[in-house]
Length: 233
Image 1 (tube, rainbow, N blue to C red):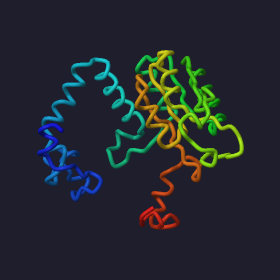
Image 2: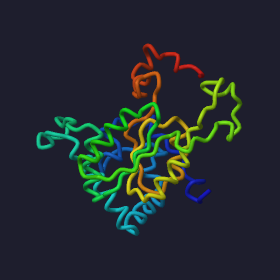
Image 3: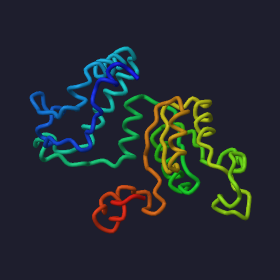
Image 4: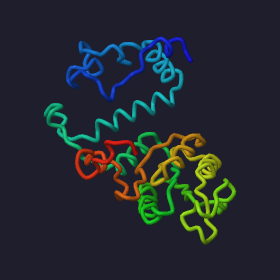
């Protein structure tokens, strides 16, 4: 544990008590709570900038990401209160990859989203990118190899291939993808892929089997149909 980490209050931005327009992170003369990372972590802020400036490719990545962020809104000339979203995430992903002059894109997806993968693959290839696509079941390794019992499988009566996100990562690394687009990996499997992939990674969609891959639907209904989430799960 670093000196600053041990001496600095733990940030809690998710429950910040300061109104958004008045926050220090939104304006130079804003207000901040006692544990605000914008005011209490100067060493970490300085380190983050040093990382950017020490690696030109990372600095350019951050610069282009901010440009892409702004270009996702229309009517910017009318003032901040009037801006509106104008692009879906898949379009922004294509545009950002083009800004970065990437040529080879990794498509890392779940078997259950194979139809979507075919469409996404076409969108990338239609826009001049080479794709390296690796599905979750690649390798055909039995779940028994990682210690699962048959009764712990989705189908306990037959052979079942494990999802193999580490293999997906190694394949993407081997074929030297410049950016990987992740969509539909299971909770946990996505984390393993992110841990072992060496290229830049972006998430196009997160898996939610119940909600047609829209996990925020449960959050929006936190006080409605999904109010059971308010208790211990």
